[in-house]
Amino acid sequence: MEYEQLLRQRQHQLRILQIFPPHLDDSELSHKEWTYFALEIARIGVILIAPCCVLYHLEVIRLDSVLCNITVALCIMQLFISANRHFILYPEGRTKRLQYWHQLGMSDKLKMLEFYHRASSKFLCRFPATVSTKEVRRFYRKQNAILFTLFVDLYVLCMVLLIVCYLKMKPLYIWLLYFASVLSGVLIVHIGKRHLLELDEILILRKSPELAIGLTRQVSAKESSALRTCVSSYHTGVI
Image 1 (cartoon, one colour):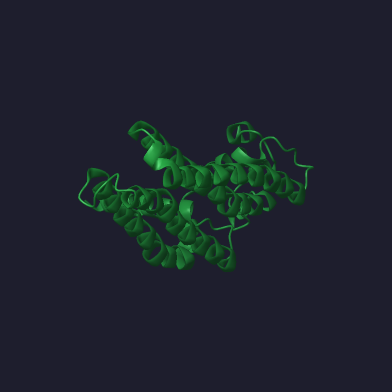
Image 2 (cartoon, rainbow, N blue to C red):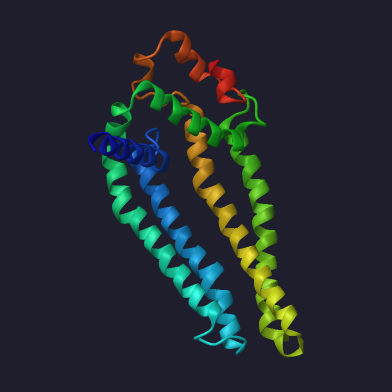
């Protein structure tokens, strides 16, 4: 029983460290969490509420329809998850993430480093270490701006076609436009999340891949230098 409690506590600490990385300071973490909360509210509005309200306005669905019930259930679930993270997990992560990091054993710390480096490889694997952070940010700013503009235009076009041309359309086309608008909304929020949340966090991690939170005092100089080296794979850099 005591072992199971310790195991659950360890899993909870690892989850907190995954969501609230110790290499972010309090101001960076606060900015990240408020941005995350705003994006989750935008996700609910853009993906769930707006397309469903258009269909209801066009009298394609009713309030007691299956789609409306599913939409309401998903909105409630998403709000609950976002509120739990922002008002319960975030205060704990802000105050205790460094404490949890120091309480981890060496194997768990290396697992967390592997998790962070896997996350960073999605963004940085194509860039050598000589490329500056400003150049990396400029590349993704251009890429995300093009994709964001494309999917926003597609989302607006689908919604406008639904509102303007629904009387001349077959039901199949109406539902195709609905699902196209939902998919476009998903991609819009995903691009916003990658650019506003993940990219900044990864670029901060790039400056301090060893996290500089006492790990170097506990491992040998060889391991410490390996953790500081930018490699394409975490296992390649350690083994």
